[in-house]
Length: 68
Image 1 (cartoon, one colour):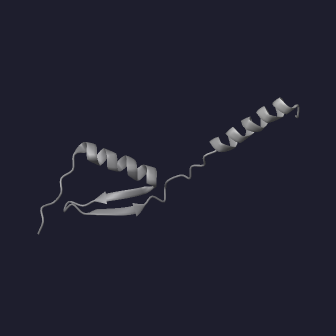
Image 2 (cartoon, rainbow, N blue to C red; image 1 turned 90 degrees about the vertical axis):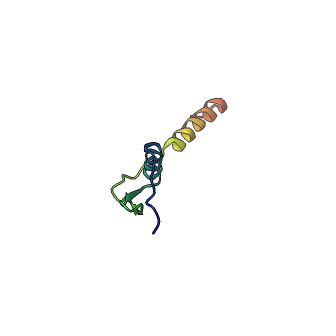
Image 3 (tube, one colour; image 1 turned 120 degrees about the horizontal axis):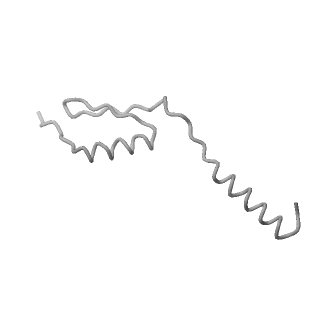
């Protein structure tokens, strides 16, 4: 049987950050096993920055060409 793996605090913090970014949870077992679970409690994030950019681009176009 193999020896359980040991992780540093920095490695665990990095893994936790990646899990949050990708919407999963990881359960670590005492034997070194890992169980990856989808995080169903994570709120949906909607990126509206592209729409804001389009609105600003349209306003600039209309101002330049005398529309609006």
